[in-house]
Length: 102
Image (cartoon, rainbow, N blue to C red):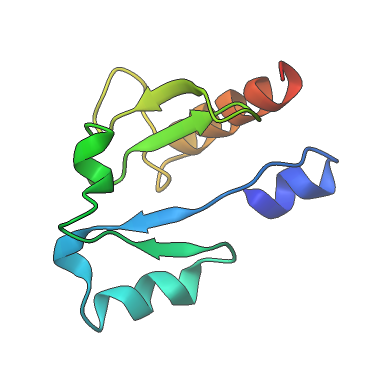
């Protein structure tokens, strides 16, 4: 998706925050192999997921100033399962809207 949006001239920054519980091999390597953007490792003393009331496979869209636009929890009202066309297209549409409105 990042490559598609970049090719369309729609620039955004992306990153993933790996769960505290997934800080061991091979979990990190599996994600690293698939990501073309930064992978950050959450730590118990930081608790990024907890601070953002987040969970596995949640998405957060922020504006350029760092203000949260929308939190999309996995299995929430909006399908964001990237393994399905609907989920992929839903997330892509929301990212495009966020870019175009900011």
